[in-house]
Image (tube, rainbow, N blue to C red; front, side, top):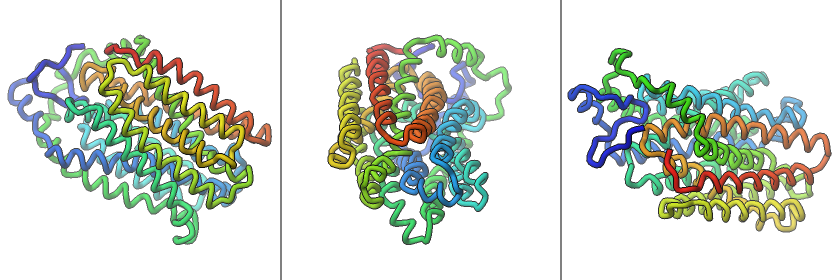
Length: 423
């Protein structure tokens, strides 16, 4: 994998790195203003968890409406994760064909459609809408690290902090407003569908960027100019231990995060907390994630070796999970703080390591695709498995204890992925 030389013009992560005619190379450099790109990144990031986080406080109502058992209800959060993994496979191919900006814009339109479809009357529409939402988020997830590496190479860590924090902010507002919106709009359907507006606004912000990029990219090039070693590079990445350590770190922290998204409010209410207070504790848990997601990437960018940082944030998560196991209601706000800061930190660290472990934008895009394909497929097991264990045992002791096992695995993965190495 050739490294980008100082002074050389950066090109799209999705475009080939083979030599190009001077006219074509000049056209490829046509980009939107950095301020517009940054605005688009923030708006897209706000959407990357909002459509999922707003489901958790309403999961009981959705299950009651469709007469779903606990295991079946967990599919509302499991299906998006499965398609977040599957959609990650096609993201680089779509970007090579249409351009990063166009695919990001299309993903936001797809997200808007999936949100609307989730509230259609038949239960099949709910699950199909969940699949579309997961696919759209997958495209956003995969392409963002490569975009940041391409357009902000000197500020990759700070831009990762910005977009991961915006992602969590969207989730926080969605979780906190889910029940109030349900009451104000007359049901869970109105609460869920309201987030289609945010997706539409973000799509509008990416539309001019897609148009500018299309004018500046030669999409009519013959197939012979495509990167000839792409498939070989993909196979080589799959044989790289460091790539798998980053991938599994991403997957394991996502598994813990989406188990909490799916079941944390239910853990509180099943232990005697009121629904409204459980929703507020859960919203606070997502809110404090912003602290970890902003600070940890900045610290990671200043460190050559991120292993101490990885161990520290995972131990904080394990401490909060232990408290949730022993005294779920009495110390709820404390456990939510510890787990939230740690969860934001592990997410920010996982996203930052995709950039720091890569030599260039092309490799960052490929590693992002691999990490999020296999990572989210691993994460999709979490909500469903925890729901099944809860249904089988009738309590939350064993399910929460399993999260501690996941934390132990995350420590070992962080020790591998945090090394000062490049792919």
